Image (cartoon, rainbow, N blue to C red; front, top):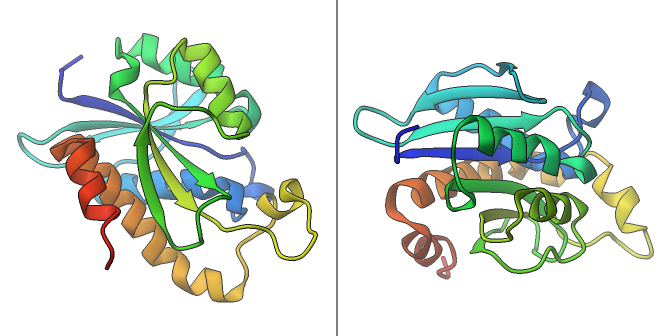
Length: 194
């Protein structure tokens, strides 16, 4: 594989009943990126649906993936994709929902703990390393005493739905910035006050 290839995994749960859930925002970002590069998700030899394409001539190649597994067992599909494409964790970008970041906010990091996110925990274990890049898409905390598990498995609410296209676009822009300019430059852009 070219050294300008990146595996971008959008986390979520399979099935139409989960498609609009907060927990599936990673897959929504993968859909946005696929639309930008004119690619369609198709079945793959690994347990994932994959869309491949380039950001343009001379620009990085993206392998976009949506694991066929549930969020908490994302590690096996991600590990299989890394092996299939002969990529290391340094070429992996995982896009996922983040409770500890306000809605409509995107934050970027490499490595670190999983923060209780079971999808990240499983990927770290299967990949044998936490040293991959994460695009953390803020979904905010649940209201009142709502259980976090119930909250992430609900669809975005009315006002959130209106802002969602901009959030997905920002997260897709962040992925593009990471693969083209590096994590530090992307962080400077997306972590700066507006």
